[in-house]
Length: 108
Image 1 (tube, rainbow, N blue to C red):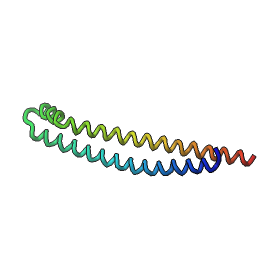
Image 2 (image 1 turned 120 degrees about the vertical axis):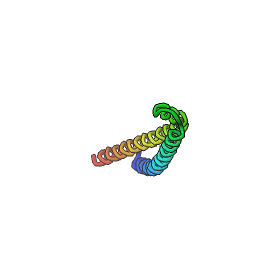
Image 3 (image 1 turned 45 degrees about the vertical axis):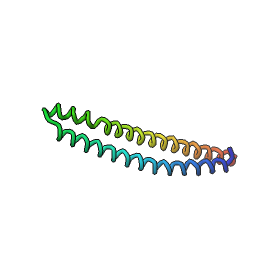
Image 4 (image 1 turned 180 degrees about the horizontal axis):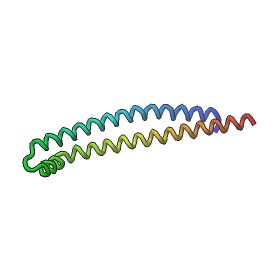
C-alpha cells in the first residue's frame, strides 16, 4: 500500500463511520418506539383483562407478544449497528497504524 491508498481508505472508513452514527440513531429511535408500543399494549391488555393479577399478567403477555418480538428485533438491530461501528473503528485504527509504520520506514 502506498500513502495515497491509506489516505483514501481512511477517508472512506471515516465516511462510513459517519453513516453508522446516523444508522445507530435511527435504530435506537425505532427501538424506543417499539418499547413504547409494547408498554402500551401490555398495559391496556392488563387493564382490560379479568381474573387474578397472575392471570391478567399472562393474558397481557400473550396479547403483547407481537410487540415484544418487534422490540426484540429492534434491539438486535441496535446491537448489529453498534458492532459494525466497532469494526469500522478498528479498521480506522489499523489503517492509522499502517500509516505510522510507513512513515517510520520512510525516515529510515
